[in-house]
Amino acid sequence: MSKVFAYDATYRNAQATVDQIFADLGVDLTGKRTLIKPNALSEREPEQGANTHPALLKAIVVAAEKAGASEVMVADNPGQANYGVIQDLFDTNGLGEAAGDSLRNFGINLVPRELPSLPDETLYFPQLLFDADYVINVPKLKVHPGTGLTAAIKNTFGYLAGAQKAHLHVIARDRRHFEMILADVFALRRPDLNIVDAILAAEGRAKLGTNLRYLGKILASESAAAVDVLGATILGLDPTNLYHLTYVAEREGVPLDASKLQIAGEWAPAPDIALPMGFNPGETRPEAAASPSLVESASRKILALSEDECDSCAACVAECPTGGLSMEGEYPALNQELCVSCFACMEACAQGAMELDPIHPA
Ligand code: SF4
Ligand code: SF4
Image 1: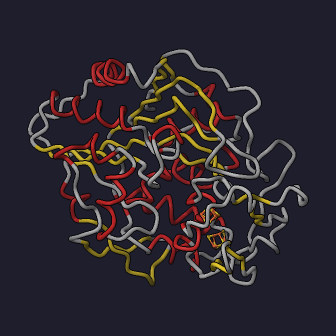
Image 2: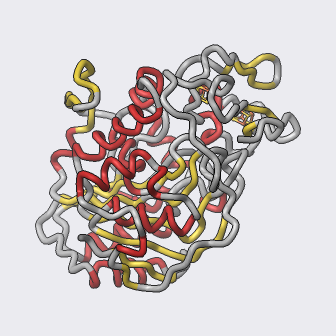
Image 3: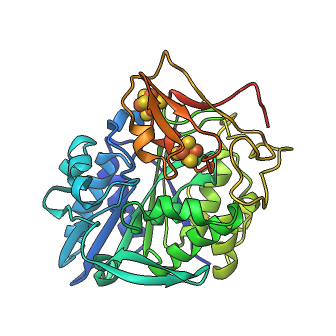
């Protein structure tokens, strides 16, 4: 079983922590083409906590170079962004500056692959992913209204180029199927090392994007499933309720109980983290209804817009995979018939203006 390391950390001392991770795990990259995959979800500023923090990314780039990598490459496919806008996004969120000359475009030179969970679909992934000798996965620790957790396994969904992610949200039969697809994408190129930015984590019951919690931790492991079990437990999530995590953990023989993991370093569950509807003790997640909509799902999740907080940027409309949102006048309007509860719009909203309607608690 893979050991998990929990470090006390700040963004200011990120380099010392990453150097310690490389020492503790004996990372030797001599002659290896090394790919670093952050979570570069949006163009938001580092303080907004949506992305892997640039200070951590920079520290990993430096450590990989010191560890002898023949080439260090930083790449991600953020949201629905295609190859043409990836550079712009990295330019605005600070991750491009942190990557420096190591930044690569993950949206070009794509090669076809099929997944066991989607035998009739051909998906396209960057050749770069398969050319890399060593992959370092650098997610941000966040809750998520659809999957419960965004951490090491879910961060690999960014292997997929452009709008394919949106397509999969639409064609998945139900939530379990969607999360089996996540597990299969992960398995295409299992990361060699996972370093989780849990210094500033994102929480939220009804909205995403503005609720941050300082945890002061960096988690690391060669096992994405093991580090996700620990990350979920710190956030107060039940790992057995996170489908994508259960699928990968079962394949890899990782226990879903943090007390059964081999953990080095201090950790404890953070108190009173705001969890999404359906993920709190006593709540049940919507199950197998086909593409459960926000209106029809068992937990009655309905999107609501705070016009006071909305700046009419239309980022949510651009991210919606189904055309379920459109600008009507100054504000986005939801067509509930088209919504498949992927929550991409909530993740895209830098203002935290999109939330689950609190008058319909789970
Ligand atoms: S409205 Fe939001 S949650 Fe619904 S499909 Fe569009 S992006 Fe996904
Ligand atoms: S809800 Fe958020 S993402 Fe959508 S237009 Fe308003 S501010 Fe932009």
